[in-house]
Each structure stands twice: as structure tokens, then as C-alpha cells.
Picture 1 (cartoon, one colour):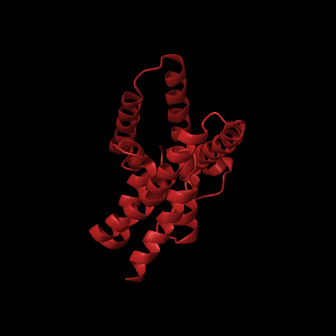
Picture 2 (spheres, helix red, strand yellow):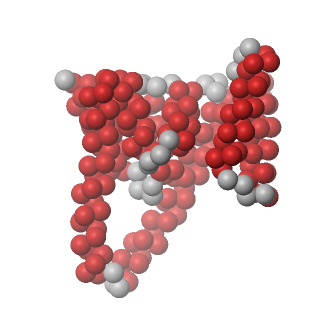
Picture 3 (cartoon, helix red, strand yellow):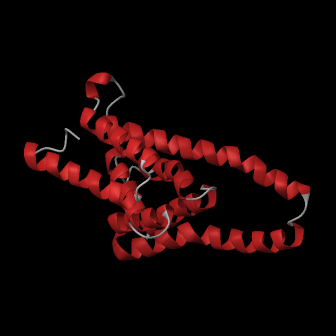
Length: 192
């Protein structure tokens, strides 16, 4: 019973404090799941975010469902997901009423403008955290522990996405195929 309450409480906080959407939620999820509770390692968390991004739905909700199943089975998934979406349901309902009434007020515009830099900072922090996890795994970020195959693959994917602008799903599939190929040839995932 205690694990269900803990799951609900941790993901209630994720839902409450992940202002700015999916990418902005990643640092909050990391803090709750990896650092505070220790339910996942940083490497497992990186895998979780990859899976949560590839599956339909919001990152936070997909993460809640995955962690809930991992920690406490199907009931854990339901409880973690409910904890994650409850704040959004309440906040959006209240904000819809307020916005409908005061949408032209300068104070509302100022609040929204003030939140933008915080959201950008959260997304940047999440991106840097994921990049370091992909390039260095659980180790400290020094050149001797860098996974150069991952660095080359990330740089190539970034360049193709910026220059050619293909469908990101195609790039995900191609990078996954490259990782599978490296694993098939070397027998290890350490090279990528």
C-alpha cells in the first residue's frame, strides 16, 4: 500500500511542477525517479525517455505508466498515471475559467511572458542531461569515457534534421538500426 502512495505522490509532483510540457517535465521526472526514489538508474532513465518519446502520448504520462508498471505492476501504472494527470486536469480547468474572463489583461500577458524563459531553461537542462547520459552513461563526463560512436551518431542525426528536415521518426528508426547493426557486429552496446 505504501508503494502506491509513493508512486501517486511522486507523479503528482511531476504533474504539478512540470510547467511547459513534455521536454520541460524531463528534469522533474529525473529528480523524482532517479535521484529521489532510486527506482531507475540514469541509463535506465535515458531508455525510459526514449521509449516515452517513441510511444503516443505525453512524455510525463508515458513515463508514469512505465515506472508504475516497473515498480508495482498494473495497479502501480494506473496510480502513477492518475497522479501525473490529476494536477493538469484541475489546473487547466481553473485556468480556462480565469483566461476566459481576463485574457486581455496585461498581468496575464506578463505572467505568460515570464514563464517562457523558465520553460526554455528546463528544456535545455533536459537536453544536456540526456546528451551527457547518451555520451558518457553513468560515468563522469571526461574524454576517456566518451562513447564516440554515440557522439558521431548524434551529430549526424542533428545535422540531417537541421539541414534536410526529414520526418524525425525516420531518423529515430535509422539511429535504432545503426545501434542494432553495431550490436550485431561487435556483440556489445558499448560502442554506441
